[in-house]
Amino acid sequence: MYQILMIGGIFAIMYFMVIRPQKKRQQELSLMRENLATGDEVVTIGGIIGKVTLVTDEEFTLITANQTEMVFRKTAVAIVTPKDQPAIADANAVDDVQDDGIREEDTEIKD
Image 1 (cartoon, helix red, strand yellow):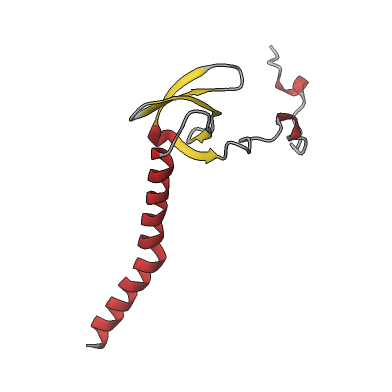
Image 2 (tube, one colour; image 1 turned 180 degrees about the vertical axis):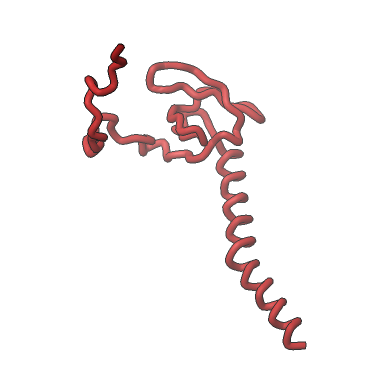
């Protein structure tokens, strides 16, 4: 009897710590993708950032910073940023990039 209670307890712990949060996250993602609208700024699962210009049932069109239009499936959306908050505040704000220590002359091919 004690072994059955232990197995049940382990299952309950697994349910509340793993399964339930994952289901909640999937529901949130599904709702976010269903509510995708023109004008939303999104980040795709591939890291592409842009503004939504057209939304259909299964796909949406994204325009990037260099005015390139791309068509994606709604499942490619990773993050939708609020309309009043840009996906990236300022492209020039990335000043903390560290130098990798490789000089350009070290990368030249020499015969």
